[in-house]
Image 1 (cartoon, helix red, strand yellow):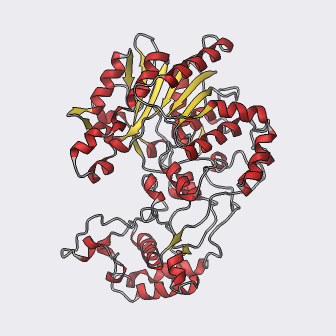
Image 2 (spheres, helix red, strand yellow):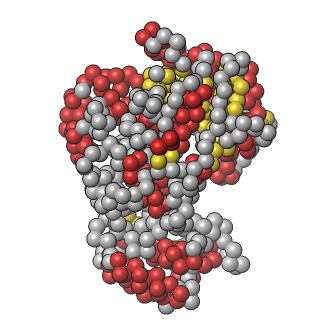
Image 3 (cartoon, rainbow, N blue to C red):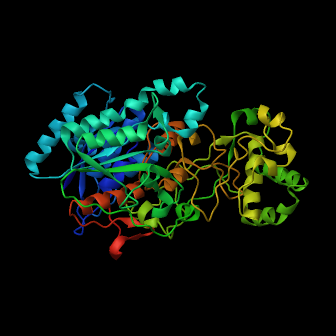
Length: 515
């Protein structure tokens, strides 16, 4: 078994992929001996997952006590869950640390070295892999565009957090490391110097060769970009991922193997239809009859020049009927392409959590209805230029526009059934305008569970905290299905045969691996 330390772990998407990988005998290839996350709520998610991995039934399914916690999510059910296997809970607490990595403070580096020595005492000659990625906000192209002054960007301490990662490499000398970050890393500068070039230099100075997961002979920074949709993930998520190997080790590494494109429909098969819900302000204004409001909105859209062509779409939607509820706790179908990925640990249970529609202002329901119908009719999302004038948002740069070319013209973005979704980011926690459900009858944005599915988290993965915190955790994560394929590349380099689940099947026609 191969030891793993996960830095800047977040909700655990990268670690989930490594932990879920099985060898040809069905045994886990990797074991996380330490993960670090500084945010308390996110750490609770990470710790819970570390515990769940330890208490799975012999057939790989989750125990009933965990299903009870998924249903209830209260202190009483949590205490019962912890009491179910107290030794395993203690081990999970030891594994998942709530702590902050700081440049120049080697306390956690020393703790990691101690954990590794303890591990190797019982696993002689075990390889060791370091995974994780520094917080990416400092490198985000969107974040940088919003800064008023370049000097604010240069002063951002997040630039130096990769040095914490580097300190672990220098001290613990992993056989292989995996470091993930946003594309903006490639063009970011710090005090006038390219951040990406500096990172590569520092890793090479530490004794490592930095390789690509997409090409054997990288020639430019863009050759380190991994496009998730090429590897079975139903989402267009592009991230920089560096694969570091000790210089002179003789370790040979392969690349990720492309698979058939997965779509939003593949990911959401079986997810129950929901109606949106009204915001408190909307309810206070008296708009509380949802069906009546949506039917009226459709009629008004059809009366506009831009909406006249949508009659057939609205007729088709009405034939399906209005969704009857704004939340659902049960899956409705189990025949989806990715069912054995999302539902593999549930046994006969149809439980589904975190599938609750968020509240929207009434005017946004009109826009969501129009956007979904327009996309179904024309095969592409609407921009503000396509909107009836009555649906244009009351924003300053829209009101003052005179040329019909709007800044952020895709601020209301419907996701398309037969394509991968756009990138799920932490912005989904603020509003759902970029993540409109494609069914016109539902008039809503994606739920936490739907966003988690697009990120390829299995349905038994719980995100602690309130809904805003859950959306943030999902948006900032690495897709576990992609991570599992990266883990398979690492395992193969360390001469362990493994079978990742990709594109609805497991490589080499093996049955799906259970965690």
